[in-house]
Image (cartoon, rainbow, N blue to C red; front, top):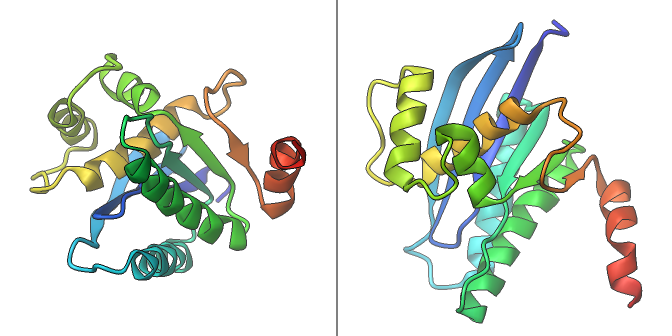
Length: 185
C-alpha cells in the first residue's frame, strides 16, 4: 500500500470552491472525483467561510488524502476581492492543517504550466488537457472543479522535486514556524 497516495486539489473561492481528487498507484495517476461547492447563493461571508471549512473537512474525512495542493491567490487590483479569496484559501488550509494533512500552494501560472506547458493557458485549455490525461468523459459547466483537479495533478507532477515553487506545510507547528518572522515584524 505504500505505493498508493491520494491528493486533494483545491481552487479556493467565495463564490465557487472547486476541488478534485486523484489517486497515485505505482507512480500512475487515476481520477477519483471532481466537484464544486456553490457559495454564490449565500450573502454572509462568514457563513461561506464556515461552509468551505466544513466541506474541506468532509472531503478529508471521506477520502483521507495524503496531501493537499491548493491554488494560491493571484494578485489583482481589487483589494477586497483579494482579502476574501485569501480568507477562503486560509480556511481551506486550516481544515487541512487541523487534520495534519501536508499542504502545498501553487501559483495559477505554475499549475497551468504543469498541465498544459503554458503558464498563460485558459481555463478551457487546462480542462481539455485534464480531460485527455485522465480520460474524463465530460467536463463540468463551471471549470472551478477542473482548476481544483489541476492543482492535484500539478502536485503529482512536482512530487519529489526540491525546486517546487510554492510553500509547503505539514501541520500547524510547521505553518507557525515558517510564518513567525512575518508575525514578529
